[in-house]
Image (cartoon, rainbow, N blue to C red; front, side, top):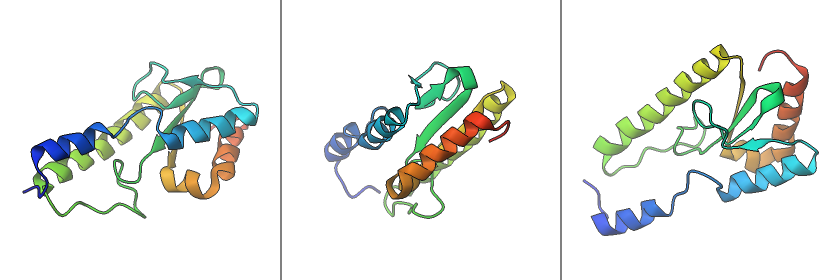
Length: 136
């Protein structure tokens, strides 16, 4: 049972964005400043946060909560009948999208929000290395 009213929960959830989060925007600005040019929300399976079309590199910025980060994820104590299947579906969907994109010849890079917050330059280096490698 949720401890918060439906109205308050709706208000909270409405403030969660799936695109152009502060983390994504800041990360993209850093990437742009390094001279890398990308396309936003390109229409391929999984809707990556951005892609490098000529290199067929897709990049996802994954929230530690919504994608069940092994380091930081904590299952909510309330309303677990909703949260457990929801988070499990997200993780399963991520795996399916990774496999589908790889089958279509895309290289898939996923970054946890804590990785970007702690070491954005290292994440950008991984993207740059993907330009020079055959596999990710």
